Amino acid sequence: MPIVAIDGPAGAGKSTIARALAKRLGLQYLDTGAMYRAVTAEALRKGLRLDDSDAVGSLAGECALHVGLDLVTIDGRDVTAEIRTSEVTAAVSVVAALSSVRTEMRRRQREWGDARGGGVIEGRDIGTVVFPDAALKVFLTASPRVRAERRVAQAGGDVEQVEASIAERDRLDSTRPDSPLAESSDSVVVDTSHSTIDEVVERIIALLGERT
Ligand code: DC
Image (cartoon, rainbow, N blue to C red; front, side, top):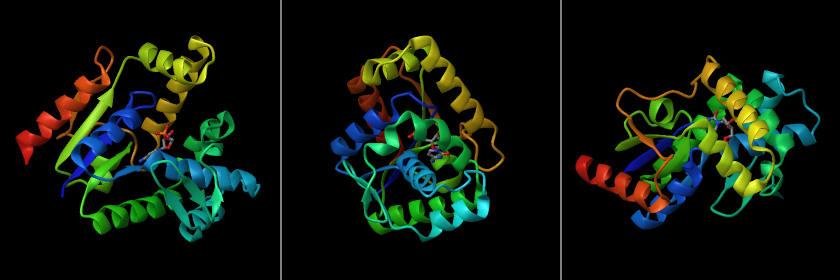
């Protein structure tokens, strides 16, 4: 079974598309952003300094982390809702920049893919670093304004402010030294600004058909 890597910036529609795609293909789905978010939520709860690479890295290595379709737990604690709070969203890029954390997350992501022999995996570095041999690498994007409008439609807020915070998170995610958000040379860029979910899913299924 193939690995389909779905990378791209915040709000491009990765989760919606990757979930729908996994369902259509009968593959399992992994949201790697939820993994970074869960570690961030637990580090905040424990009062760790978020830039303390050793402390947060140990937490990332030692915790029991479960990221399922509708449930996320860390050390048995349900953090499904907590990882979507503005507090966690504002802090996650700091934690995701730590190499100590990324090493542990990558190890878990590869184990997940190997155990299932494939799946649809979404994130920022899946096609570039985690699964460089993925059967298909999609870089999903949309204009900053469209991404902000989608977030506001989901969770409310002011479009200008949300657009600014998305831009800041993209900046942090794209400029970190360890596995930054970037297109892979062999990824297919799919702009979702003016497409429906079904159109994007069909396009990706067609691309996968061409490659496998
Ligand atoms: O996709 P998301 O917004 O839930 O991701 C949360 C953060 O985690 C995002 O700001 C960047 C980081 N992330 C990452 O660095 N690498 C991944 N593979 C997935 C997410």
